[in-house]
Image 1: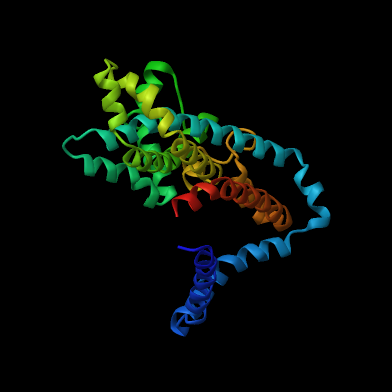
Image 2: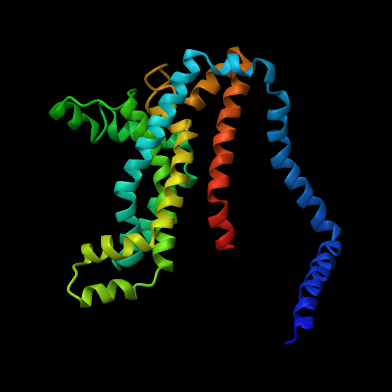
Length: 279
């Protein structure tokens, strides 16, 4: 291929792309634009209705920083819990054949579609003072989880864990298992091969899953308010503060929502390169 032919190819591709855009059927274009507007207009409305002049005053209140600090700490702790138990679980689902693996995978992903309030009720039934596990924790160790900060972490980890597991499992399935097999032939145990070979290979997937889990934990509402309650300074996270402020001070609720929106945009920006590469 000559240099002239190579220069012509990009122009041809641009013309074909332009033709495809111009040739979009109207029955597809109209609902696509409606869908785009449906997603964007509420976010624009939030920006338009934000009281920018009083924003610093609204965001410097003690309760706001208390809720923000608690949200960041609990989301980070929930992500750490998800990493500790989620990465091994993802490895088990991706690398080990065992009876009922499909059922286990379905149960792991169930919190993705389960209403968060139902998840909170399920946590109460399991870990509450009269729960099937919680009563033993209370009797043996005097440990009570509902309506505590630890309860917030557990509720957030419950809804965030599937995001991490799905991301890491997908990365593990894409990784070449021959590297682990080569390490095994050199005398490494499966655990040594995992943390010396596999873990560095799947680090980007773990990082992406951790960010998604952290963002999901930060925005959790239903399971948190059901299992941990809404006590300022102890269990009131940012989403709960938004809900409470909306009833008495809509401007404060809008300002708090803007903070969560900014965090979401930052998460999207951080994962954009990974998604673009995957695309």
